[in-house]
Image (cartoon, rainbow, N blue to C red):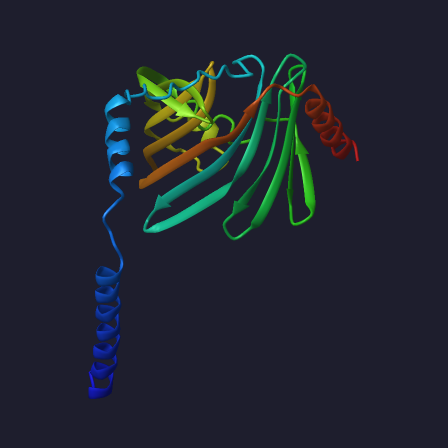
Length: 250
């Protein structure tokens, strides 16, 4: 550091010390006696206040009627390569029928959108990519990814999401090969998931799986987090079903 820089630092330090000396010398820091005594008296008569209580919020949904908007991150790692799909999905379940819609960013493909609705025993799923849409009578592929086989479930305590208090579950089981068949054939493995449920509705899921396929080890993670949860919408269901069937009939 050269001489001019040191001189600048010394000048700034000198100014700061001079201002501090002026403040300590010219300003009277002794509080008025009456005010000081009043503060002491007040502090002696004050009583501690109880901590505020957290209001219990009753969810406006249950396992048979709800609509939840989730963020979604799905990651697959194998042979030193990691692929991640991110997006969001809205899932609704109710008396008229079930529906889902959302958007995903797919590696090397772009952004895909989808809509799905049930009608009786049929499920119509529309997927659009690069302006081209197809409709199949099958469930959206991610719906069953966290539904394993030979699953054990243990309650681990309480969890809190969206200001709702629920139960945190630890799930252990095997991945369902059918759920992953469109992505990876012959996949098998075990998973552990931590799921937060409120009133029977999933508000978050954090799944980690170690699997193998065709002799290759693979690690899969799936994270879903509710950003909004509310009652089932019959109007959304009807609109989804009409739009999907309109494309299907073209």
